[in-house]
Image 1 (cartoon, rainbow, N blue to C red):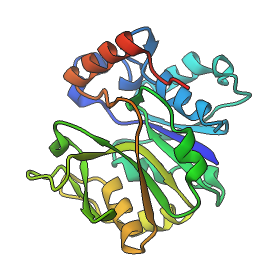
Image 2 (image 1 turned 90 degrees about the horizontal axis):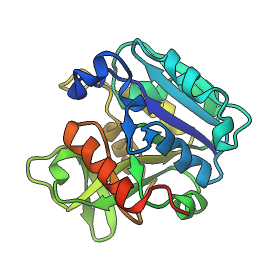
Image 3 (image 1 turned 135 degrees about the vertical axis):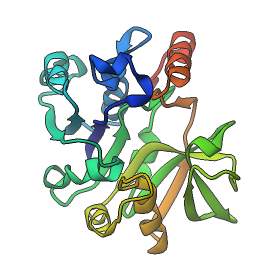
Image 4 (image 1 turned 180 degrees about the vertical axis):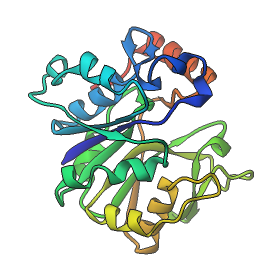
Length: 239
C-alpha cells in the first residue's frame, strides 16, 4: 500500500498566517503540521509516500522534508496542484503514483492521537473510511446508517443523522480515479471527496472503522489551537 498526503489549497480560513506560508507548514505544538500525517502513514508501515502540495510556497516542503530521512524514509515523492479544485481533484494527481495499487489518503491537516495500523491491516479492497464521534458533526461529512451499514455520506448537513464525522483518512483501490473522472463540481466549485465515497457506497464497496483516540483537523484558528493543546497534553501518533 502506498500513501498520499493532500497538502495543497490556499488555507484562506487561516489568513493572514497563510499569506506567507502553506497552512500545512504552520506549527502544531513543537512540529510543523505536515509532520503528523507523514508519521501516521509511517507508523502504519506505509513508506512509499506522495505529497500533493500547492500554492506559492510548495518549494518550502522540499526544503523542510527533503527525502524524508527524518522519518526513516529513503525517498519522498512530490507533485504540485495548480489552484484549488477540492480534495478529489488533488487526489486525481496521484493516479500515476498509485500505479493500480491500493492507497491510504490522509488530509494534511488531520492529526490523530494513536494510529491506523489495525485499519490498514484490515483493508482488503474498495473503500474504507475512519469515523470519529464529534460534538459538531455538521462541520464534516456525516455517515447515514441503516443498522451497521453506511447508506450515504452527507456533506456538512444542517441536521446530522449520526454523531460521527468522516475523518480525513481514507483507503481506496484503483477504482477511485475512475470515480473522480465522473464527478461534477459541487455548489462551491470543487470536486468533493464525499461524492467519491458515495460512489463506492452505491457499489456496495464501502467499509468503515471507528478511529481510536482523539482526532482533529487544524484548518481554522480554533481547531489549530485545539490541535496544539491536544498534542501538548497527550502527544500524537502513538503506537
